[in-house]
Image (cartoon, rainbow over all chains, first blue to last red; front, side, top):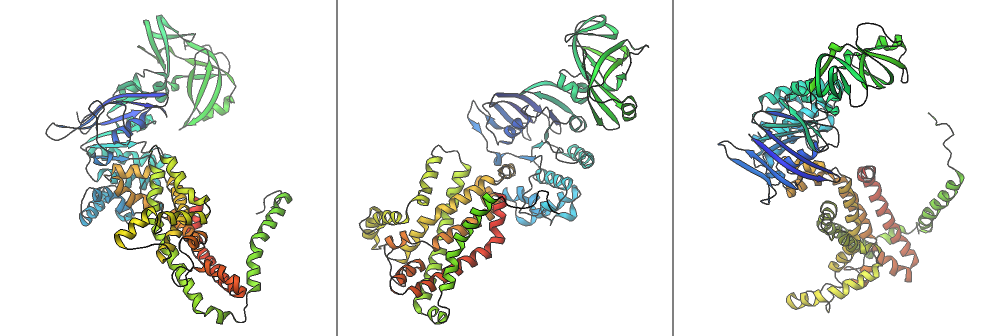
Length: 355
Length: 268
């Protein structure tokens, strides 16, 4: 393991208690809502924040460890002595330096002479596709270019640890797609450990080999992206990946939901389970339908949000659901917030797993 | 494009604003109107005028330099550290803002005068006496003007995004390197604005200077002192000297306003 961190930090009412390990070459995504403690973890790893308890250690070639924080032993290595690179949400390129000088900054502070530092900076700018823009000021770059430059600045010193703090969230949707793909490529080439903090599940699923989901300062779920999206363990994780996740108790062919109501399922179950309904499996009707779907519930449309090519409809009823329907369907049915609807789901479309 | 409702200023605001503007501008107009324009050239050529002006510019510039060297670090400590005595420190260094300058002069005399706590030691070890020298003028002006610089630089530091300093730290820069290579360039406009304020205050300093440095032509008689002295004997000369100070102040303000003051004003 290259990075081992097990830290406790008190942030006002919230106590962040996180334990993460990241191997060489591995990308760990820390996924969670705003205020969950993700950025706090990153600031502790960077040395910008003192933990109240715990330990942070980073491996070195030869199997030894550099201890960066050990509260019990009174060890704290300040940020500028840690071998790390950090990319911030809004790039934080120094506005008074050229892009090339920004990239060379970390080498200069670590004692590299001007000429070789500049050469390395040019080299990295070329790698991120900004070879022509080294002489510009950060203010003259687009958001995507600035974030690429920030990545070059973080990686140029070949750090042992790369920290990415919401690296894509300040970008517009289209730029985000291309920068995300490039970031994926650079991360694949990077030999050290990476910790990516994000509230966007797509970033996590696309960039990371492993995901930990953090809520209120604790890890609520950890695993591969596929595992987490297929078996979300909390409501938040389910909503993140689009699923309605309903806790209940298996009773043969139905699951009696803890929140009231029942869901017909394809396989017989017993005991405490989660029922997961994907939004694209939910069909909406204005009148009670008569047909094969075993699950038909009355509901009220709470909101309709365009979401790619479909409209995501949030439903309020005995069984809280989310439905993805086409924009045409929304128009034809005259769906507006407040509309009473019937929601139907085939039993075979309902996923059940033990909790 | 015109905004609906017109761009008119409400009367309760317009009247006091107009009176206030007149109040500020009329005395300066009076100065211009009453100036002895016919023999202005001859009066300006008098040796005393150039001497006082040179001394004023020199001492104000030296005082500003001293304030930058000492005041910027104070501002950094106030803005960036969490020491417990910080609010006490801020109160202490801003006392000269509210202290009557004459009192400042007396205080400086008691410390740096030949019988003062520091002054006596200085005289006994090196034979140097500070009061009634040009150095005393610079010290008095620094004492009065430095708080203006400290306050405005501290404001600039607080307004500057401290996360740039975090970014510098993750790039291997210790706090001193970060200060030199990141913080200082970021707050340069604020420092310049503070320096201009400080310089202007030093240029106009009167009370502390006359108390601590005296009023000796050539060594300690700055423009404000010369104006005051001239007013007793030759009012027209006082007007001429005042006019010179007015021109110097206005020129500085106009020259630097566009470059620094508006930008830092917008940032703050």
